[in-house]
Length: 375
Ligand SMILES: *Cc1c(COP(=O)(O)O)cnc(C)c1O
Image (cartoon, rainbow, N blue to C red):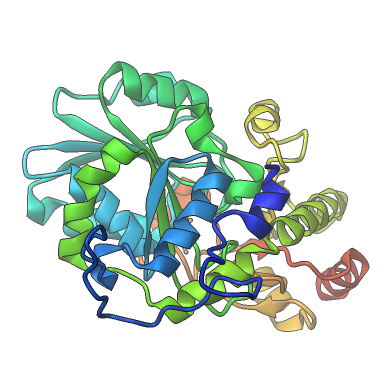
């Protein structure tokens, strides 16, 4: 099945309905059957969970996976299932602010060592691998500077050292990039973003392979970050249009990035689809569907950025991303506000930087709005 078809049909469980949608099973108690396992929401095995995991696994080329009540629940469960006191984990330097905050605030007190790797090649990561390194975790494209990492090289490196590899694929969405195909063990999504797509759901997904899941499941059950059946129904509904939405967001973002690049007041545009992006050639190979709906651009300073946020009319000055409406935010004030100013500057997250989650509106309307706000 092609991905656009899988979005619509894969996983739908129509055995108990003449309808065309998987029924909602809002039960926390399930009757024992002679051949059924013990079904319970926190065991991640309800009928709605199974239907959704089938669809998401097809989209990410995974064997299996788990759904959680937030992206952070997926991230925390995946990491802590593999790390204990005395272990070491390797992280890309450019990570979602919440993930970075989790590592900085929770790992040391659990006796887990970690390194953040600057640099964009597998050899930069190799230098930091230690005897006790158990996990390698990255994002590509990264938040908010859309840094690209060479996925196949990094997955190969992790395999060579027997390290479990994980990637947060939220920014790309499964429409544009399938890291498991390139050798990654685990793909994580903040489904709150593109998978949900309408800025009204909070959930996370962890997708990978069956043998590995048996290792993660006990931790997932202990931590209890499971999701309810009603939300799962809405997610399945959202996923039917994932391909359509992301295709449109890819086109809009590329057009906006190209137009912003020509604007005299824009110092720099960060978008992997631009030939000026330092790793554009690698992005072209690993982002098969398109370059995604996220971009950032730099204005002169914080005053210019704040003025832009006040003047936009159609786009909304809001945190979060991945919905059908265009949103703009200042990473220094939002996702990365918990970091020290010096730490932010070192990462390239200036006060003049604005991050755009490009929506599915008509491009002309987005462009007109940005033009009037910039003027
Ligand atoms: C939002 C986000 C998360 C966290 O997801 P929640 O659903 O808010 O818990 C993790 N990674 C990335 C890249 C995100 O954008």
